[in-house]
Amino acid sequence: MSSSDNSNLYRAIIMDHYQNSRNKGLVENPRGYMTVRLKNPSCGDDLTVQLKVEGTMVKEVHQLGAGCSICCASASMMAESLEGQTLEEALRRIDNFNKMVQGEAYDEDLVGEAVSLEGVSHLPQRVKCATLAWQASKRGLEKIEDERARGLADHEANEGSIEDDVSPED
Ligand code: ZN
Image (tube, rainbow, N blue to C red; front, side, top):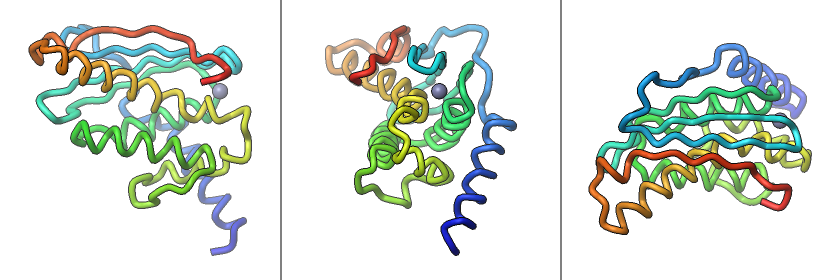
């Protein structure tokens, strides 16, 4: 495929996720969920992710955001990519996605449709738009791991909330 075919395909995938956002909407009762709200002040993106982790599995990933098309499409791709994975695999996919948009070597097999956002690596001012949702899930999953490591029972460790802005230096 020529690169212009690729970019048309990638644009179509991004538009599909933007218009038919996967796992969009938050659960009414956040008990048992890790809720993470991250804002990206440089663009105005404001995204909330809810994660339900049971044992080693990421059972549910919900997302709801207001923001640019890259941020919203990426949140949809993130939810689709991480739901149903093990914690370990989810964190691996997040790191791999971050490498891709930062222009580093990455494993294409782990990226799925999010490969359509590869071009963001050439748009430094949009990197945070693309990584916001993945960053939110990473913060949530790492908080669960940290609290388990501190000895909290799963039902305590798996529930909580984080709210933060990503700074321009992150
Ligand atoms: Zn944005």
